[in-house]
Length: 187
Image (cartoon, rainbow, N blue to C red; front, side):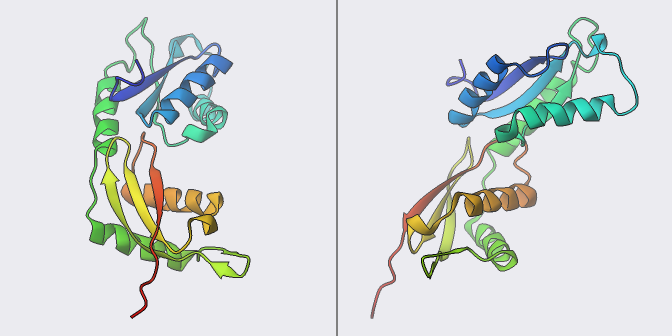
């Protein structure tokens, strides 16, 4: 079902919180590269105080650290509370997952990102990112042309993902990077 869907809805029981099974399903959604929204049901059954919703949202996103880009909705299927917002969120998430960005704009943002934080050096060599282009959508997939794939540290890749997410939104969708080595041609 996850493989066939366009947008996955991860349903969490508000009384149980994020269970081990929820985390496994979230991992499958991430592996398949599917856009996702987290739906917390039975919100009417929770005792509320000031800040309960934000505290619960933070706890859900902490439990699903690898999916912190997903919007979290609080609904009650029993009373219908906020249930009408689910399809609007699905539309918004789908729009982000299927968004195409022109190569020129991508490379301008890449230049800003690398100026803000230079790629790290490994063994006296620095990663050089020549340019990038968007290969596909659902999930947004970008090809980074670099001098040496082995110099890309996962932390720097995560930095780039967060920078692109902040710049272009990409709410509810994973971002994938593919590294390709591009050798400098000697003339």
